[in-house]
Image 1 (cartoon, rainbow, N blue to C red):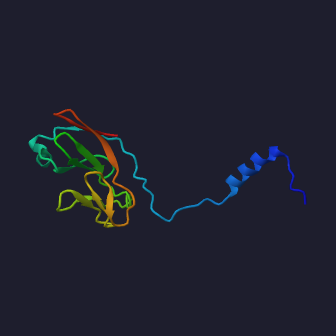
Image 2 (tube, rainbow, N blue to C red):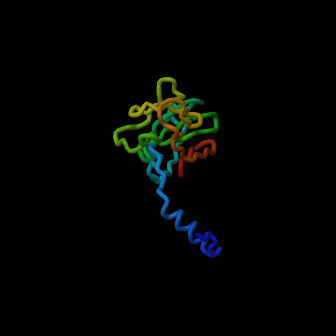
Image 3 (cartoon, helix red, strand yellow):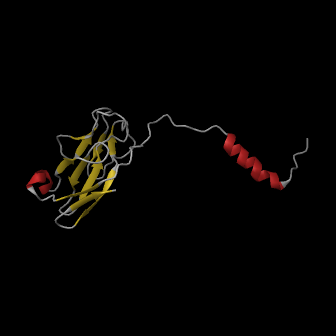
Length: 146
């Protein structure tokens, strides 16, 4: 058997191998929270958002896919997260909730827990952080957007 083949066939063979090799699929849920346009402006120092008046305060807002959690990380720094769990995002009745500590959240469906300062998971099955929205604060108005 002669294994000498023209070099011009190598790219064709590599291409065919890539196309016909079985696709690997992981058996883990995918972080595919649908993208919903978000463009919100609020005054976090108003009485309407009383819990945001202080550092480590938080509020729930309407918007995003399942709602938004806003967390005041510092006097001028805010974090905004999607309330859909990145692990069980397709559970239509489930929303991430801020727990009694006020600085962590929990998904009531899968029991994943996340830290509000950066959205990272620290307990439960979710390997994904909470989906984060962009924020900008000019001293008066907090803008939340994607």
